[in-house]
Amino acid sequence: MSRFRVNTGAMRSQAGVLKDQGGEIEQLAQSLETIYHHLNIGSSDSTRAVERKLVKLEGKLIEQAVKADSLGKALEYIAQQFERSEQAVREFTDGTVSAATIVHEIQVLYTKILRALGLDKGYYNRKAGDPAYQISKKQEKMMDHYLSDACAALRNEERFSEETWYKATPKEREQILRDYLVEVNKIMGTERPTLIIEKMEKESLMGSYNGDTNTIRINSPRLSDADSYRLMKTIVHESRHGYQHQACEHPEKFMVSKETLDQWRENFKPGNYKTAKSDGWDAYARQPVEWDAMNFAQQDYYTSQISGPDYAGSW
Image 1 (cartoon, rainbow, N blue to C red):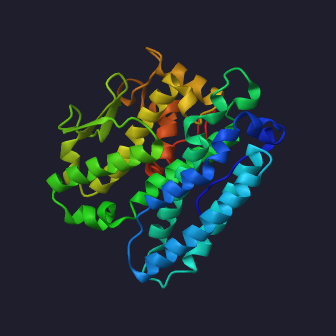
Image 2: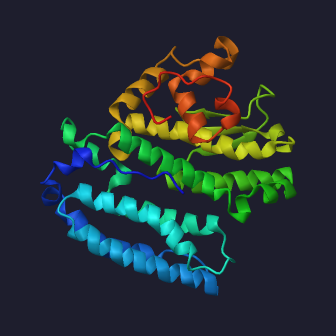
């Protein structure tokens, strides 16, 4: 079950939200109709069953969300349906469609619903200075866990699976990384970084991110490691740094709380970023932007080695 929650506490008191932004909600049905036509879940009997169930869920969602007398209630309903739909869709398959495929299609649908509602672009930050429109910590955590799980779910697809990876040559693995980077940044809603795969100056490095050029570097010799599949999580980790930089520059486009943004911006200031070489592994891993990226990428082999820092974000 994906960790998807919506905190409606701050929104419940905003009776005028739908009045102010009624146009967006009124267009939801039309937006979702367009969204449905772009879903591609195959042509087998099993996937047609999934398709039919999604249509029913979508119709019910539209009907209830549009009737809501506040945006908060609409979102609360969407969150509840997200959680229920995973099991509901599974019941309509004959076992030939993997659970991961089903969940991924639902995630795609609900990501697009969020976009239709404007939530993936920091809807509540549009009115800067108004506390009612600020991103809460719970909203941020909901979005972070959702995006993290969606990136991880991609690795259940055959083309990104561990089995496919270890059957591939190092050159073929480069293409897998490039394709995965595209999909990860689609999920995150970020400008895709340039990916450079080359031998880096330090053999132990997996990769790095340059915020000035929005570039990810992957250490090419690591493609031949026995545990080289970890590079898939490196792509997520380094892409998260891109997310951090873009959120700091354009907070209105992302669901990140002011407290987290403040920590990221402070960490990115010249002289404040710590490296493992100069400051030691613990200092490097416990700083806000690295702790966030490691947890977002679900790199438990790193985070389990250290105690969590005093971090304002989701982890």
